[in-house]
Image (cartoon, rainbow, N blue to C red; front, side):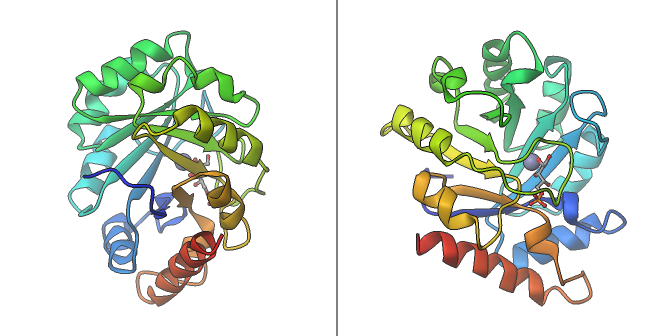
Length: 227
Ligand code: DX5
Ligand code: ZN
């Protein structure tokens, strides 16, 4: 996939029907999703448990776009190969998840995936400064990770600082948490290009009636593009 800074919408299937992931993935892609965002939680790094590598491999068989796997687990390193083999296009790990994020990013690339590095709201921009040569994306969390549907935390100053640090390097900035048509312009203006949204994409729709997914994706994208 060629690099560009156009706005990309990555619906989080954390807000999908857990009994029907295959059709949910097909529905969001048919209705304008650019990437599919997969939230992996371990009940240890974050206070919630979602899915492991076999489930992610099953999602893969439905994803036609780009499978973006956000690991909220600690430790990370013992599971990188399994998530790579599950078909992840990008694997994102948190700087807070262990002492050796630099090694983790090297291992993600060595496994053949794009590498993302994530920052919780309490972690400063400077935490990624020495990692940019190993990163294809920086994920700025705008909620404390663990659950969908939380209130947006304003991280625009951090996004702008990271955007300046990146310069003309081909590194995406992703924002995750509380993204809606109201908040997407703020993060886009600050320099984010990949917008994750769970509840704001899936609200009002279902696999039986997926048209609202399309309207929701278009509303988030249009507001960000107008920023
Ligand atoms: C939070 C997850 C997010 C979450 C976003 O821990 O990483 O991807 O699903 O959900 P919304 O868009 O509902 O805040
Ligand atoms: Zn996420």
